Image 1 (cartoon, rainbow, N blue to C red):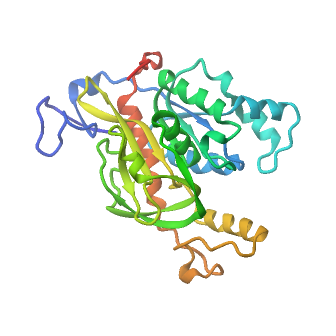
Image 2: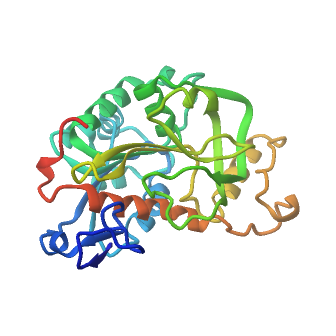
Image 3: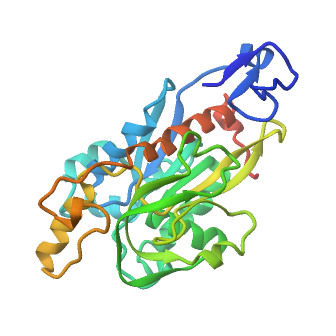
Length: 323
């Protein structure tokens, strides 16, 4: 939460009129607080692990966060009609998930679209692409800020900016060093200049294609793995501040210590020649326990929650239709 100062002037150390980290006392006295409404379109096969990993960090503030889990209408319909699910119990989906059409008349402070087991050459070739496009269009009128993860980020880059992602010769897989380039919205507040993030993907957008779009700010980049975090900002509070209107995260700050190892064991069981995750196991020895050197990077989710709190109206129906 921001600190409060008794002045409408710019304090030399607490720039109240230039950042959401500090606010003037008159504004603080009139602040109303309610739970933040966050919807998650969870496309991951192992839905429970993703739920736990995200909820751990989304709830890591003093703010109340109400999570709504949803999935595409076609998937939810298949589950209701008896589809067998390999990685998530059917009863869990029936109990805790809604179809997107069941929540589309609501508004949300924040909205997350996760990754999916993408099989096709292009993002737009996937069977769920038409449904995902419909959901992405809907976010323009019903959501204050959207956060897109992994395949979800690639889908959003394609939909909103026609930035294509291309499949590599082999999977980009491991723990890669990233550099903090720019952070106009403060989404990476507290991050070091250099940090490692788990990466697990086949397809990536090209840096030069992202740079063609002025609205896309590359916040974190990697020489080895390419851009990781892009932010599309929007004004709030009468245009005095910027907030993250859309966040594109290609990698996985939320991964547990053992997640890359679990993926490696799964894939190497099916293919004995499957390569080790780069820079992950000590001395590249899969018998050794990896050390979690990236846990702090998941604070991007708590920073996002704080940004939502600062930007969202008390009456959720006042979320504007256009930005």
